Length: 242
Image (cartoon, rainbow, N blue to C red; front, side, top):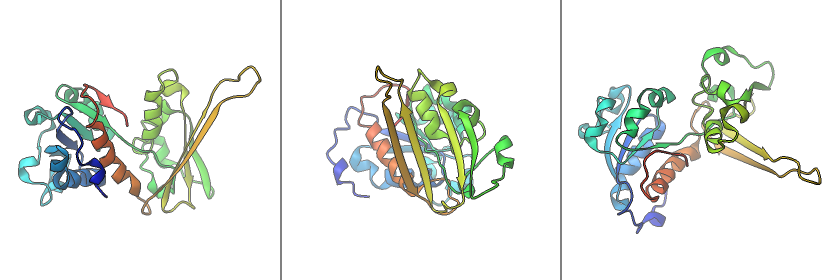
């Protein structure tokens, strides 16, 4: 990825110390960018935490490995990026927010069944044809059973407080023809106007992905660019949706 567009950014007034929670594909990519490109952008990696600490061996300098997430305050982070399981935020989100802003970035996937990581009753469902709707209903009912595949829906529910988790509809579709792509469609429609017509917006996104992958190829770059973009904003405490 070219970084020239980021050079010369005025980062003297924004967060500089960054902590990474999770060391899967996204975490590894962010750590690599922070170690190689972070210094010229005014960003300093201060810790990396993973549930399986052994996964960091040989790739994350020992001084940056955080063994106990509860001790993150000792590293004085300005921004913490969570790229782990949603349970981590449920368990430690409040503690993280005591010390730093929390960048909450995820994508949802509608793809080949092998790209899903489902839990509860959804995990036992089997497609009966080449394309099957596994879930259609309020996002609140989907998130607990598809925590890795419903993040775009959850972000929409948070960004639209007048609708929330009960009135934003989530649809999870298994399509055997989509072996190397994740597809996201967002449809928004307003109430009928005086003429009976409604305002509507429909976006369609196709993110290339390796067969069976949870994370699309473009998502890795998107996370890095979102982190850099977040650090250009005036520093404010809280969770950032990008």
